[in-house]
Amino acid sequence: ETQSHRHGRYHLTQMSITGICCFRILPLLVITIAVFFEWLRTYPPAYGIVFATVSPLLQGHLPALIIGHGKTKGTPEVPEDMKPLPRPEHELFADLPGGYKMPLSGIGMCCRYSAYDDVLVRRTILWYLLLGGRHIDTAHVYRNHRAIGLGIKDAIARGVPRSEIFVVTKIFPPYYGYQSALDIVPTFLEELGLDYIDLVLMHAPKMPIARNECSQSGISEKECRQETWKALSELREKGVMRNVGVSNFMIHQLQEIAELGLAPIANNEFQFNAFVPPSQHELFEYCMENDITVTAYYPVGGTQEKHKAASSETIKLLSEKYGKSSYQLLLRWLVQKKAAVIPGTGNPKHMKDNLDVYSWSISDEDMAMMDGLRSSEEAKKFTYIDLNWFA
Image (tube, rainbow, N blue to C red; front, top):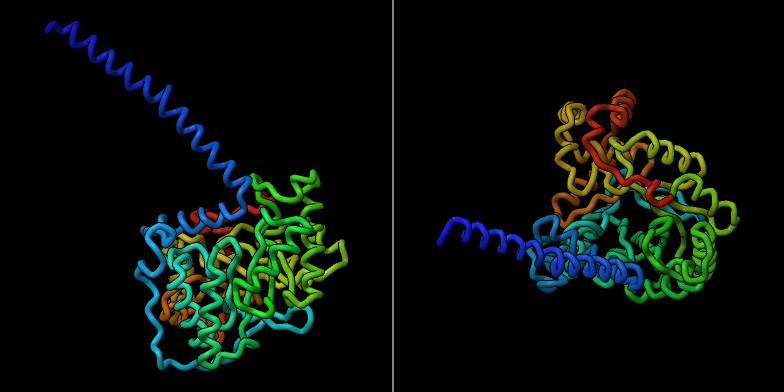
């Protein structure tokens, strides 16, 4: 066989591979992506399925949706003879409309593999409540309402009063709109097994590719949020929830809701920690000045960035000074600013550590030092959710 023949065969092989990629694989990929986005746009539960699949995979675990609930190692079983421990000494609260109080130290039930396995979720809630915690933060889109409700039921059976438990959940944008909100939110009660919910939040100002009642009727995003708020205000009057609030809302979006003169905005939940940029701090200050409590998610950084907080020179210095972990220091900084914190964990030891934010304090000088982190070089290492994406 001559060299020219071999070269010709090689060239044909290259053309065949290129042809397969261009005319078979690429169109299939385009169609798959198009179908995926159409699924997200038209099927409201799709976002929850993505959450419950992607979050475990990013942490190196197979999703419970694939392998089955209870197959993942994580939160240990709660001893059968374990009784409720006392609530934390010197516990701090945020005051809500109607005289209700929200514990400032909570647990977030999102964005980690153990938050999407029903068996581990049920154990997590029982551990947390028996260890003295009382504030549980979740959302309809996380698909763990029923497991959380079972954990609450288990804790009540062991002596934890329902009246002490503060449950927060959220309605996701695909369900926005007056009638849609009226229809979906009451189903949360059945899923959670509760007679009332303490606080229901609008999860985000909008979700760009989601189709809902509002997009189908052609009203604006602003009108959609307001129509949804009208429904939530009515449900609050009926006792479905005691308070209503928002999540990831910017100042002008808060003002759009406030101008309705309906139920007061009890809470705004957004990413807030010592490393977020000044704009997030301005939002925090606005909320504080307008009697809107703040819940900080990702209180020590992003979901994959906890190690960065521990490597901060300022945080390491102050952690050594106070004899606390970097995470405890960052949580205390927030609580001392009167923000609620909802660190996520399925580990009972970490739950104890996270609840230990009330028994000590940071000096004014050191609080100011931590306030300065927002403009430091260290802050540039962190990612944050830019609320302008929801504008």
